Image (cartoon, rainbow, N blue to C red; front, side):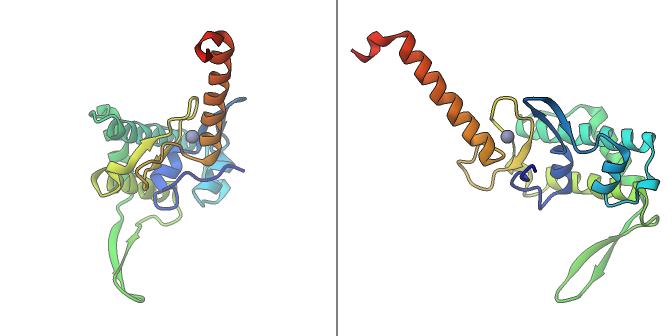
Length: 188
Ligand SMILES: [Zn+2]
C-alpha cells in the first residue's frame, strides 16, 4: 500500500502524476492495465480500451511536464500544454452553481461517465493547479530515485512521504559511516 503524497487529496492532477513511481524493483504503475486505469478514473472497466489507456498515460506525462516546469521555474514543452488543453476541451462541460450549504461549483459534463469527462476533470484540475494558489507549492520529492511530486504545505518538507525521508536519512547515515571508516584520521 502506497501512502498518498501531501496534496493528492486536493488535486486529481497531482494524484495522476503519482500513479507512476520508481521502486527498487523498477517501475510501479497503478495504470498499467485498462481495468486498473478504469478503476482509478472511477469508470466501468468495459468503457476503457488500449487507446484510451494511452490517452490517459499521455495526459499523465503532460501533467508531469507542467509540474516539473513549475518546480524548475521554466516553460513546459508546448506539446504538454497542448495535450492538457485538448483533454480539457474534449468534454464540453459547463460550471454549474449549486447551493447545498453554501455556494459550490460543479462541472456538468455533456458526456457523463465517459473517458472524456474523466480526463477533462484531470486536465481542468491541472490548469487550476498551475495557474492558482497551489502552483508555488508544487515540489518534486528530493529523495534519490523517487519521482513523485507533492504540495509543500510546510516550508521544510522535502520528501513525498515518511518512507522517502527515512530512506534519505538512512543513506546519509550510511555515507557518514563509510566516510569515517575511510578517513579515520579526521577523528584524531
Ligand atoms: Zn518520495
